[in-house]
Amino acid sequence: MSKVCTIIAVALSCLVVVALAVPPLNFNNDVTMYFGNHLGQVQDNGNTMALNLDQQTGSGFNTKNEYIFGRFDMQLKLMKGFSAGTVTTFYLTSPIGQAHDEVDFEFLGNATFQPFTVHTNVFSEGKGNREQQFHLWFDPTAEFHTYTILWNSQRIIWMVDNIPIRVFENQESIGVPFPKTKPQRIFCSLWEASAWATQGGNVKVDWSRAPFTAHYKNFVVDACVITNGASSCANNKNKQPWQTYTLDADAKAKLENVQKKNMIYNYCTDTKRFAQGLPPECKPAQEHPSA
Ligand SMILES: *[C@@H]1O[C@H](CO)[C@@H](O)[C@H](O)[C@H]1NC(C)=O
Image (cartoon, rainbow, N blue to C red):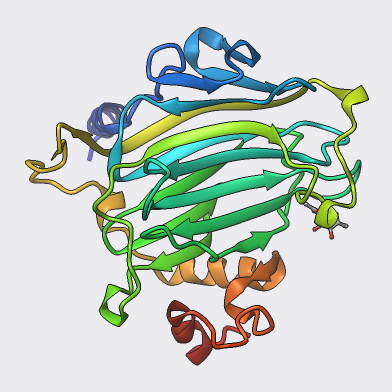
C-alpha cells in the first residue's frame, strides 16, 4: 500500500471508531438525584458529578432510564485521607421490594493509609448473600479509575480498569435464578454506615473531616433501554461486543490473578457461614480450584 493509502486507511478506521464510541451520559439530563439533592454537584458541563456526605445527610443519583442487560462504565475517584464509616456506591437495582434484582459495587472507606475495601454482591429474585470483597492494587483516591458492570444474558462481570475481578455465571440450569427479566437502573450514592462499614464497625466516621466527596465522571452506558416493556435491543441485527462477551484466556488469567492476590472475602469459601452447605452456584468453583 502506498503512503497515501495507509494514511487514508488509518483516517477511515479512526472515523469508524469515533462513530461507534458511545458518548457518556450527561449528569444534567440523564440522571436524577434521589436523596441529599443539594449535595450533588454537576461539574464539567455535565460530565462529572461530585457527591457529598455531611453530618446531616449523604447524597445519591440514579439513571432516568431502566435497562435489561448492558455495559456500564463509570470513572470514580474516592475521597482522600480518613474515610472510615463512609460507603460510596455504583450499582444496578430493580425497585426494592419483593424479589428484586441487584448488582453491587461498593467502596468501604477506611482510616488514613488503610485500604478501601471493594465490596461486590448480586441479588436475584430477592436473594443476595453472595459477597466477594477485594483490596485494590492501586490507590483509588489518587486518580480516576474505571469500574464496569457488564451484564448480559449469560453472565455478570465486574471489572476494574478493564480487568475482570469477579464473574457471576448464569446457572439457571442448576436452579440458580439469574437477573434477566426485571428492568434495573444504575444508582450511585455516598452515605454513612459507621455501624458496619470499616473494620467491622470499629472505626467510625469522623465528622470533623466532613464533607466527604466522591467524584463520578465519564459515565458510559451501552445498554438495552426498556421503554413501556420493550427493549431498545429487540431489533438490533448486530450484537454489541458486551452482549456476547465471554472471558478469553487472557481475561481468565487476569481474573485468577486478582482473585488470588486481591480477594479478601469470598462467600463461596465461607463454610462457617454456610454450615448447611455452600450455595449451589459455588460448586463449579469448588471443582476447579484456581490455587
Ligand atoms: C481497612 O483496613 C484494614 C487494615 O488494613 C483492613 O483489614 C480492612 O479490610 C480495610 N477495609 C475496611 C473497610 O475495613
